[in-house]
Length: 120
Figure 1 (cartoon, rainbow, N blue to C red):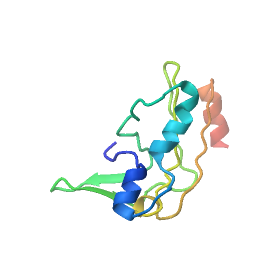
Figure 2: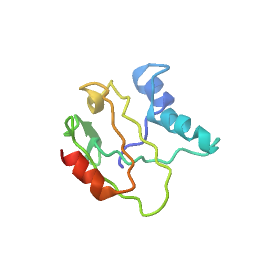
Figure 3: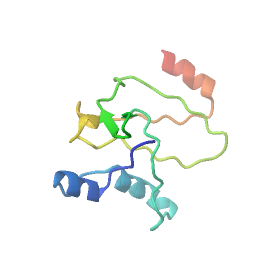
Figure 4: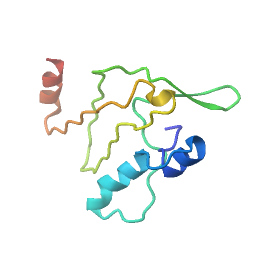
């Protein structure tokens, strides 16, 4: 939650790259069917597997992720939600130094059954 979602401007200003996939646009594309329109994208995002720290001088540092293939997070919604997930498309910094990877999202009504299935 220390780093904003990447957007077109970040890729252009910091890397001189245009047309790069980014979490900001991924969010807007996912929310288009819910009439999100021109409302702001929530920032900062909840970066589950991003490895970000704050140095003693206040500098925010993003390092290679500590997560590995197969790592998982189980979350429980206590009410109906619309959730948007983006497999981070950043491949120009240590955030995505191992390459952009797929993410699997499973939505289940029965969390206990899901946990048993994932344990196999």
